[in-house]
Amino acid sequence: MASIEMKNIVKQYGDGFAAVNDVSLDIADGEFMILVGPSGSGKSTLLRMIVGLEDITSGDMMIGGKRVNDLAPRDRNLSMVFQNYALYPHMTVYENIAFPLRLSKTSDDEVRRRVTAASDVLELNDHLERKPANLSGGQRQRVAMGRAIVRQAEAFLFDEPLSNLDAKLRGQMRTEISRLQRRLGITTVYVTHDQTEAMTLGDRVCVLRKGKIQQVASPRELYEQPINLFVAGFIGSPPMNFLPATPEGDRLKTPFGDVRIDPARAGKLGGHDLLMVGIRPEYFEDASLVDEAKRHLGSTFRARVDVTEWLGDSQFAYIPYEAPEAITTQLRALSRELDAEELRTQAIVSIDSTSRIREGREAEFWLDSRKVHVFDPETGDNLTRDAEAGAELTRMATQDRVEQVQESQDRASADGHRMGGATAASA
Image 1 (cartoon, rainbow, N blue to C red):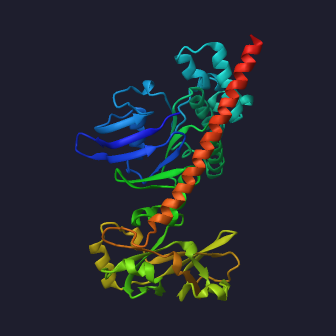
Image 2: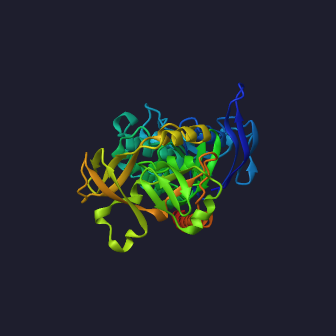
Image 3: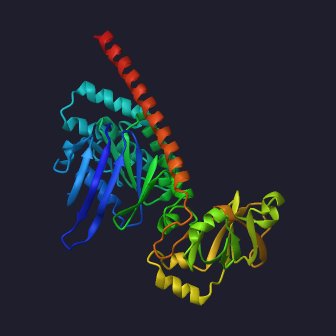
């Protein structure tokens, strides 16, 4: 295993376009790092520079403390799992997994031992003589992972490995990849555009946009303490609602009425005449189901429900709203961070499945004012972000990872001793 360090990495093409622009990122030994962002954000380019498939225009790529900018991919001792699995159709599962070992002239006994160990971990023992055409998508993905495991590489690199699978299988494979990474304790870099994968798999998540890092943090910090409008809108499904607001003392005037925020947070909003309020769907509730004891912690308002979606354990309600044209025009002129989607004129509300709210009718909603985010529409900065609380969330996640890596290393060491003892006995 090894750490991966990127120092001021730039990838610039001949036409001057910078796909990756001054990225600095430290990935600890044994860490599971997710690179996430929309199409064109530079995440796959960055992964290909780590493995050596893309040249680095400037900056330093360090693996295990060693600069590898000029090393060929085969000399970096990294294992990559591709989106299309890259299996050889004429080879059996056993032969596909063993292929990198054959290339390195590994002895037959060692090949057999490593392939058997990998197939045990991935539950492929019953399929070793089958060919890829006779496997399901999930089984093919496990074969690709098996080929990565047997190399005993310094790190695993995944390039959107689950995008070809159906929703149910993606969920199963997410669990398998997470379990495997925890068991092996190996440094892993995983590229995805799917935020569900990003939020459920990684120790930390690096959010990229237009070749630049926006925020690197634990999934929980990204969700609860986003650094800017882009991260807040990108992380979360359904996405965060953004509403224009004007401050008046400890209140924000929004299309849904006045929202009171505590004085400490209100004090951070000075000097702004126009703001953006960010409200996640679950920050709303059906007011009729809110305990009287906590009503004072939020604000209530009435609105007509356009559409509802019942999901079994919850419901989504879509609430249209109108913002004054002058404010909308001012926001569009002011903001470099908002796009048309973020200035939509309906809010998505998550409510309890027992709610009697119905389409086409007016209903009363309650909004938890304590959780509202407030953004500067010009810079995109989250003005109410609690940096200390966010850092603590990531620190706790990092500590959990350190303990898990140590357990994995201890387990691997014990397995190695047992294996060595068995070999000596048989000799």
